[in-house]
Amino acid sequence: MPLELLALVKHDCPVCDQVLPALDAAGVRLVSQSRREDTAEQARRLGLTRLPEVDEDLVLSERFDPAAVPAVILLDGGRERDRVEGLQRDRLAELVAQGGATLAVDGLPALRPGCGSRTRDLDVAPRLAARRARADGRIVSRELEIGGLEDAFEAMHSRGITDGLPAVPPTPERVVAMLEDTARHPQDLVGVVPPYAGRATVEKVAINAVMAGCAGPELPIVLAAVEAACREPFALHGLVATTSPPGPVVVVSGPYARVAGMNAEGNVLGQGNQANLTIGRALQLTVRNVGGGVPRREDRAAHGNPGKVGMAFAERLDETAPWPGLAHDLGGLAADATGVTVFAGEAPRLVLDQLARTPEELIAALAVGIEHVASPRARLTFDALLVVGPDHGRVFREAGWPRARLQEELHSRTHRPAAEVVRGAGGLAEGIAADTVSDPAALVPKFAAPERILIAYAGGDAGLFSMVFGSWAAGEMGSQPQTGSVEPWR
Image 1 (tube, one colour):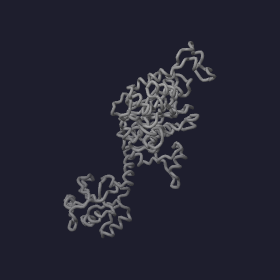
Image 2 (cartoon, helix red, strand yellow):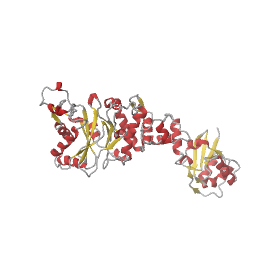
Image 3 (cartoon, one colour):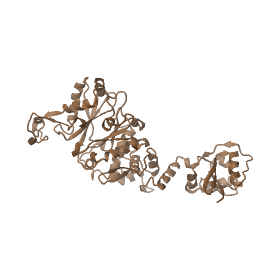
Image 4 (cartoon, one colour):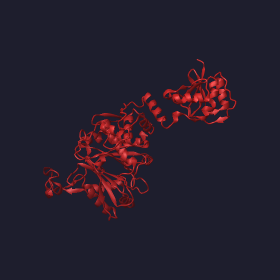
């Protein structure tokens, strides 16, 4: 097969205008990235002897992917041997000569940079990337067709794939861009999502992350959270199906939380931060759209809580932190790694003590706060996630209390005599069964073990406050918190 010279050009490039007549005279194959009518107008304006071909759907341009045009490419049997991008007069003349033609260079400047190839345009490059991903099998999900007169946001809601809030349309272009933030193959399995055992691939999670409003750097955290939540001990199926209000709470510990833009300080459990709000939402949308956990159908919560839209926050691991990150303690992660802890939590509530100045005083207040998880009468059934605020955390840091000591103290201070928590005591029907009590003075713990009180550190500097999340049914009978590393998903 003979050598072939191919020139990629476009109609609105002054450098293409300058070199096109010479390329036309040399018999170079001319291919335009522009529309047919614009290409014809350019040929007429320049007095070309031939009408350049039109690169339909930019197939050739995508194949050779020049950074700039004019791009003159020497092909040998259809394979590229050499190229010149922009106007480099002497190099261009040599390239054309290699192809067996002569380029008239009189009047051409020695050097001019070209114009950006259309394949690099902001409205074109994502479309081409999505097309390549589809052809390569990197994305395989079917596309939802939206009618020309439909509003995309309302169409998504009417098709039952949102959580009631507006969602970002997960176009192939947006999904492929999202996938750039993980090294994992889009078809890698992240987890099997209950209740209907939907296969959450990296692509499927990325689709829901787009819908949730995530930015790309948040995707590895979402992937780690989905993987952890799908583990059998977390009992996600039960959490979805229960009539109790909790949903997954994602605690992110480590330096990548800052890279992803997460907030660990003021209003850490509230609004105002894109990453915090969308990471938890992406997990919940994955449960809905991949697993099939739809509210008032599979999701049987009697009341639910606002956190079921999504709840995620970062731990504050700066110089004020009294302890290592929660994931570092639970999962044994290295200090420079980032991990997630997924906890089946209800809505958080305030634990207030503005007067305590010693750990002994403060621990008493915190113990009262966490003892009210579900009910003060509920024993050995629930866990707690205590989010210690900086002003409270400072008391423990200055006293040198490690996390384990705080857990031990909270556990010991939440024991009550059986007579106080038995059914009917104080006129309350709720409580432990009387036939399980042999000694009314025996102390009954609130929590099954000290480690069942999880402790995180986050919040703003102003305010002697902490927050506590109560759990869904805990331990082997319910949900066990799960920790995982973000690093394998980056």
